[in-house]
Image: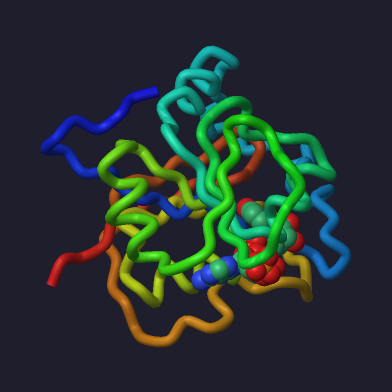
Length: 189
Ligand SMILES: NC(=O)c1ccc[n+]([C@@H]2O[C@H](COP(=O)([O-])OP(=O)(O)OC[C@H]3O[C@@H](n4cnc5c(N)ncnc54)[C@H](OP(=O)(O)O)[C@@H]3O)[C@@H](O)[C@H]2O)c1
């Protein structure tokens, strides 16, 4: 884990996988659409297991809303032992050692608790928490992966975007399985 020194400040990346029509979950919370292996894009890249592991290792901290937390517990914990902050106003039974619950002001969470401690902070959902982070200007990068599917209905990632915001495209990666990863950084005024 790379911790921040006295001078560096951690950056928050909003990471999400969306359908082509902008949904991040089906109505019944099925994730089968994320695991579709039928699509083959020959010119795309495929990450080796080592590359994928190195990528995951570069993440210093995860932040998630309580509904995403509930689903992660149900479907199989994907965050390993990496420090994970669950934003919630509820009381929860004791969790994994790496999990911390937070309720309160989100700007304080980022500025006082996370950014001084962690370099690479990943906000991994769900829609509600991501929208709050965006409204408050707490997101430095958006990493949006488009899955090759139209879901028709479900939970929208950007349902309640309050104002127009411009972002700079930083990178595009097309994968062999037809998924496309788009990376953007926030424009500073
Ligand atoms: N496709 C993807 O990449 C992806 C990734 C992650 C999740 N998802 C999907 O997203 C869905 C969950 O998203 P969601 O929008 O329903 O819920 P969510 O954002 O995961 O969680 C919402 C909860 O977070 C807490 N919360 C949010 N903002 C808060 C604040 N400012 N202060 C205190 N607590 C706050 C509240 O918890 P309390 O009610 O406990 O107070 C709220 O009910 C699931 O279906 C999941 O499968 C998809």
